[in-house]
Length: 168
Image (cartoon, rainbow, N blue to C red; front, side, top):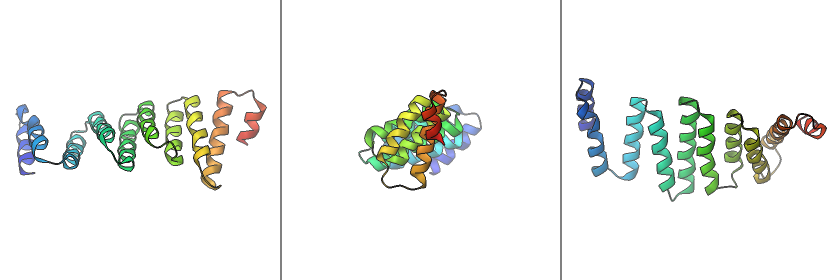
């Protein structure tokens, strides 16, 4: 921690060679989890959102724990959408999580929302339909998913009376 603080001060004074010290510090002395936390901190401080998202995706790809991998991919997708304004990349990133767990209705619905934000209603429709199929029970979430599916179908084929009735 002290070395990182000192290198930050030196880098702020115009000594660019000290920007790279964290690589040597983190790659040799910390566990993988600690190194990831350090890089998250570094990238957030520098507002290097793309590097941060890529680090989270790389960690998710290497994660044997599906729940941890899904969370890392959710974090990366949020960064792509909110910090970088790229809903398509957010959808593609979170779609990787569905490859590891295709039965999580919340995850599938979130991917559908990203595709909808990316103005790709056909991809959104695929995922919302999968979310409905994976959803167990009938509650407000299911009703919302059914409404979203009807809206997407209507958007894709506005002349279909069946799609209009499904939306209402």
